[in-house]
Image (cartoon, rainbow, N blue to C red; front, side, top):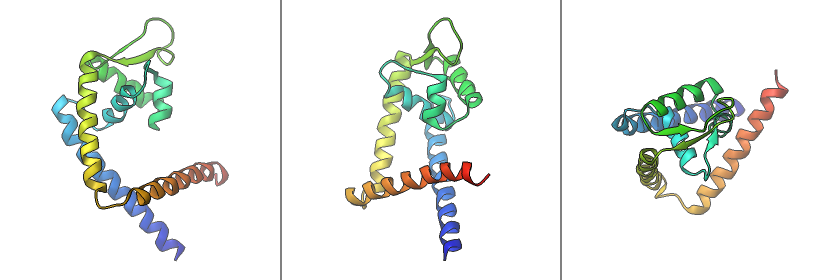
Length: 148
């Protein structure tokens, strides 16, 4: 029973992740970007004063090297800019005007897809799902340290 539940959980996570990656890749190709750029652009869109690379890495659950590659690519394409001086990981990264326009378009698409996939699920069930899933994720992080 426990094994079936664990296998089911892992299969569902992989399936959801693949679908999300395909959707992001299809949509982001329009901007010459990949799926990994999506979350960084959205995090920056919802931050008031920008975020450092370290903050982005933490909020996006990505390693610093991957964040650096993403920020460099976004900067080269004109979507973001960084503050002056200091370490790259302490400079604030902010969206340019083009980045803000793109982020609004991406956000609209994300909200449309989100509405579509959850339209037949009650708000109460959605809230319970995210609450429980969040707790499972936190417990898995604790398990990473406990079961070394």
